[in-house]
Image 1 (cartoon, rainbow, N blue to C red):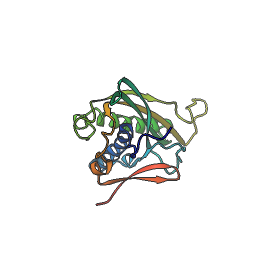
Image 2 (image 1 turned 120 degrees about the horizontal axis):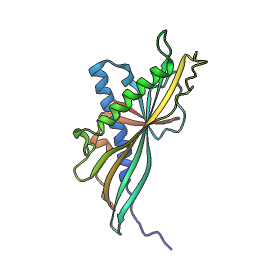
Image 3 (image 1 turned 135 degrees about the vertical axis):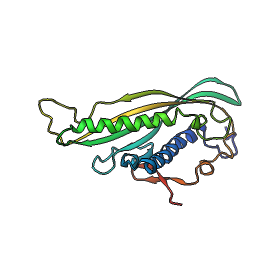
Image 4 (image 1 turned 120 degrees about the vertical axis):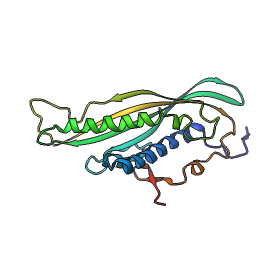
Length: 209
């Protein structure tokens, strides 16, 4: 049987949403850094990174990943689905004379997760900044914290560095018609950022303009 699709198949909406989520976080963290001078907002933002972060030089960090799409309706021309994405945040903390390393790490983690949750719950990003009709609904569905590494042990708590991670599950409901992604380009929406391919994955960088 010969191929029947004689044109380049366009990117799908879940790909657009994945990159847009990362770009929004990078942009808003940059703004918060300028407003507060808080260096925690220097967190690197990545897309689909599979390699572990180097705690000494790469944390805090954010990694956006596509999880799944569950379709509720579908026909020959269109489909409607709930696109799920995970936004993982990893932070670090050093022990001080008065505070444990894991406590410092978790405070940073809670702060960054809270800011991301606020961003994607705000009216400003009801439609993720995309053209009307692309996003039908978005919702923060879950926030989860993982145990710190190393786990605090009250008998032996001399660890100077601790890392901890958590995640947000973001739901984006959208309809998609065959071929309707033509003309919607991520570069047209966010012109001050790039998604650069590195040996560790795709990293979002804000251009100095």
